[in-house]
Length: 165
Picture: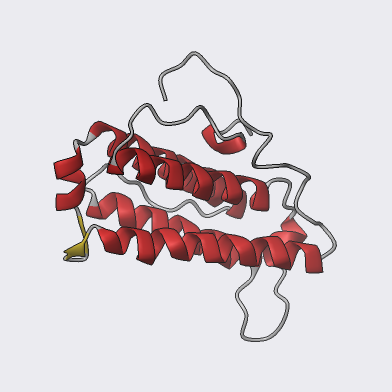
């Protein structure tokens, strides 16, 4: 699957709050991409124990977090697919849509955004931080299931591109 988040793209062209949020989203998307790359049907079903979510449930939760942010930004959204692999793809697409939406805002509009009536800051310490936590769980669970995260390096993945990011 070719995704915007397969690599960390060029630095945001903005050095403001929006640029920082865009780069945070780059990190969330990149880590989620690689934590979920190459998952098998058995991986999606795997849970390390009773009372723990399966990898598939965690992927669906990350999808829900991204969808929640989109809805709070009044950006277009869609219904969650049924297949776990499709949920993964749609979650990555939603993270990219959030990034694109933030890119299109001016800084004042970004700070006027709310999450369930709470100030913009809650987007960072709420759903985006939660997505990072659950991405770490996915990476740990798949290692427990015998399918570790494919080898990648966040400092060596920058692809030089001419496109405006």
